[in-house]
Amino acid sequence: MENALEEVVRSAHDQLLRSHADFCACEKCKDDVATLALNHLRPRYVVGDPLGSAITRVLLDQDQAKTEVTIAVFDAMKRVAMNPRHEPGVLERPASSE
Image 1 (cartoon, one colour):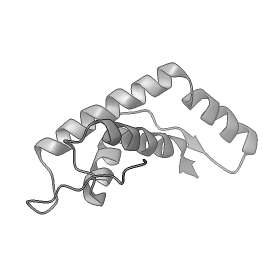
Image 2: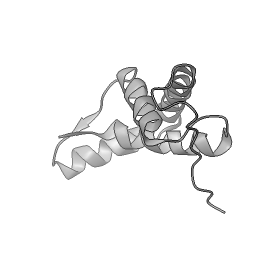
Image 3: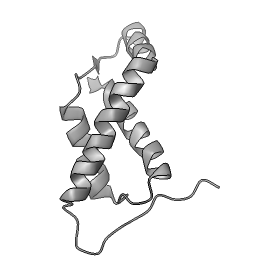
Image 4: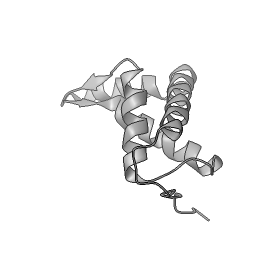
């Protein structure tokens, strides 16, 4: 059993990090953002059923679901940035995709 939303949340976070250089991309902050966002979204659990999993992933790819995830992730990014749990002075940036 897995929450199919986790993959979508982490992907949205990676995309937002590319366009917002002022947020930390260290693993601790990334995990904190994912946790906060997932706690504010309705979980979408899937089990080994390929059809159910495919339907859930298609639903998560719709514009409304993407918007909800993006809003939750960006809000979580702002909250983590205000109170980071990493060591002072740490501000990691994602690897450039150029």
